[in-house]
Length: 494
Image (cartoon, rainbow, N blue to C red; front, side, top):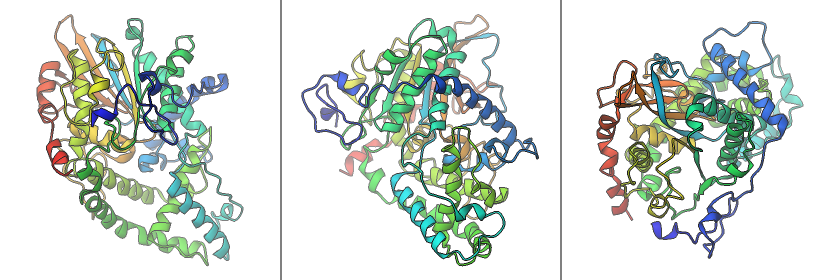
């Protein structure tokens, strides 16, 4: 499969050109370096304040007088993968221990907040049109719907999503500024426009925090195509059995079991509140999803009136609904899911140890075999991806180990699930940090992982009280990945 991923590939982010005789630089900056405006760079730090407010809101400390901002809503952290980024609660202090020095950091990030996917957007627009033509009375709390116009832009980063990623770059620099003086971060992005733009905005934020221009660095981002036939550790798609086998259908069926339990009561209530409206199970969920997408479409993250149409309990049910999909389709509950993430894990091991990549799964041997496109001497790395691909990586890293498969008939809280939920694992702008550190003057190197500022204790490597393992033991604990997982099944299915 690597034959197509060569130095002769020309990439178009929108349509995907056929391979041509173009050098590997064609993999860089395929949509042009879109520099954030000065206003956006200044506003980005506001998203830090918003995220801090989210942390308080999710803890139930939002002001009762606050009604317009999303940060005032206890529902905001329960929108599944459509939640904007916020720090997840952590039992272990996520700050770098005072006696320790970080010697390496790798970030894996989801793109920032975006509009709905194109296919979902069509469904949302049709739903709004149908409702407005059939509703005979807009009762209290739903008056806004009478004059509402559906204008969400599909797929693209929202203005708030751009700020999220600029801010992410600033935060990354602030946390690892000592390493920033030793080397520039090496940045890769999976080849969809919103992911590339997220990487660009991150890069501009990172360098703006230093008082430097990020223009030149943003143009150097390595973009890995998402087209079929191209190995890409930042996006699943290379295993036909995983993509087309029964596992996805089976996982979706588990999600539906829960949907059929909690949605009917919401459907019935909406029918009473909006006489003339004809909601079914699916359209009820679509109606709810207008809340997160309208909210993140606002640069100030202003809470959409759609959000207040539902109770906190209904939002918790919705979050669990999305958590089931991530778990059973792209996570531990899905056969072969972890095998989709082993390629990235093996790249991570190579970077942690400074040794060449050893992998025959989803990695690209052409790119990973060249110092220009897979350097091993950097102190900082940042990769940009999608939520589903990240779930497979988290599963391969054993981050959810010890958590039983989720119930499809009874809602379980993140606390009952070892900290897991879709909103805490893969919100918009989700970011995993892998840190290597030395502590107390010792030469021994330790590894730890943070997921959205939550320290996730490592498994299978004798983790200490701070969730860390030695590098050697961590690598040994990744034997599933280093042995190729179950990738042979993908090859056998071709």
